[in-house]
Amino acid sequence: MKGESTNALRRITTHDNGEPLVNLRTFCPWIVIDKDSLGKRRLRTEDSVYVRKTVARMLVHAYKKLPKGLTFKVRDAWRPINVQRQYYFKALARMKKAHPKRSASRLRQELNAWIFPPDVGIPPWHSTGGAIDLTLCRSDGRSLPLGGKTQPPPSRVAKYRALLKRVMEAAGFTNYAAEWWHFSYGDSGWALRTGRKTSLYGTANLS
Image 1 (tube, rainbow, N blue to C red):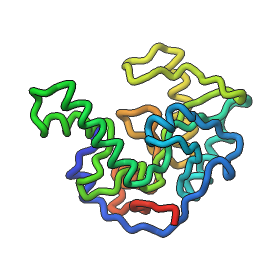
Image 2 (spheres, rainbow, N blue to C red):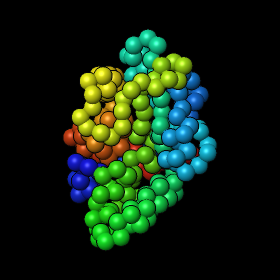
Image 3 (cartoon, one colour):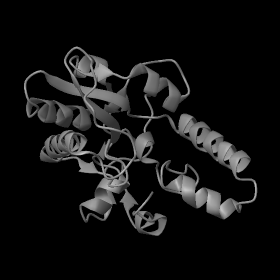
Image 4 (cartoon, helix red, strand yellow):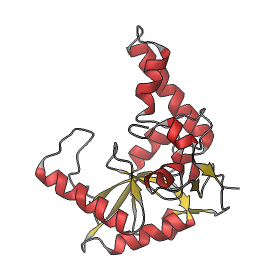
């Protein structure tokens, strides 16, 4: 969690409000699903995307603030905790293979900046149903140029990133600063960024 320490997040108390997960495919039918990204990140082929109900409602508000002809393309949302574990430890194994001389603690520290560890006593953001990874696209599914992880972005890319951030924050989401595509509500990251002591969502299950 780059810029958001584990110790700071541990000070956030979790009181799950019991809000259910909803399927974005039915709740927000205008959303485009990035099936390639979803399959890669969630380690499975199912392309249904779930978030907490309030998150889905907030996404509707954000969508209404977009210029006509644009919509959201979702890369990832809720991840079952078992999927988060697989995702994390497979990535850690790849890092160990690529950097065999690095210490385990250093590898974990580097990986934690990009993937939330599932074993530190804090509900991973994506496993709460409060986090969503998304970008902008045209209504026909053609992605806008928002770039990758490189910084600083070209001016055209920066303009689209600023638009995404503006409409999402106006709807009540907070952005994880290390990832322009990651927004959340109700999880520990959201609580930390907004100065709250309590998060609304713990680890979520479809049942």
